[in-house]
Length: 260
Image 1 (spheres, helix red, strand yellow):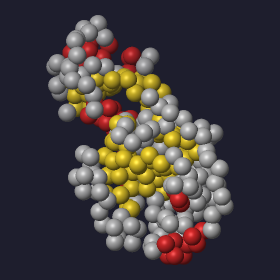
Image 2 (cartoon, one colour):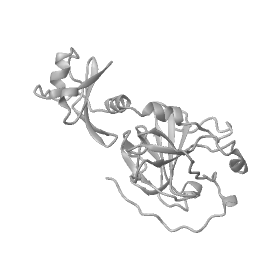
Image 3 (cartoon, rainbow, N blue to C red):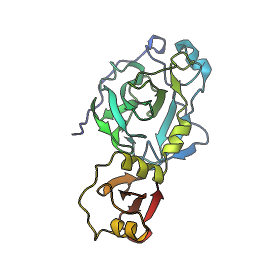
Image 4 (cartoon, rainbow, N blue to C red):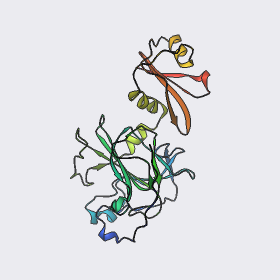
């Protein structure tokens, strides 16, 4: 069950004493709209990977070790960019040091470890399995943050989730931009849900997705219907032998499918 934690009061920090890299928040003159996750209605990039090397050299980094985002609009809810297992669950901003309240999610199939930092609230627990698009927290300014924003970090790992390439100049972090762009898209959301769906369930031969699949030669169903949310809108997907069918709830005349 999700849990909500409020922010914990923290003393002012001396940036030079930070045990982890100081994450500097910079609001651009002309924000660039990039994607729909980690925020439901779109994200604005405020600091790219590798930026401001002069600020990060003191921490042994060649530049900013992630991406900083603020949401389009006022919705500060943070959603997972990829399905995985929670391996870091830090609720105390003092314990979290520079990252404050933060969450780490390991993706075994792709050997990726995501860090969501500076949260005001954390809704997951260590060991939880989360899906892409699942609500995991609320954007904040805990830790070393100048202004509320989300710091999103990405490291590649070994099969056990241990970060590798720690001497790459960014302590193992790599630029997440291309991966996040790839993960943004309705078809990727459908595929991600299909990959973690429950096995075959009893057939409902009156359902719109089942009828569509039969009419298009997709053969037998392999999962039950899979509800999910994309850009704040409800969708349903279902896996069949030869494709994955999906539709926005209520838009039954516009069913689509992805061939296997």
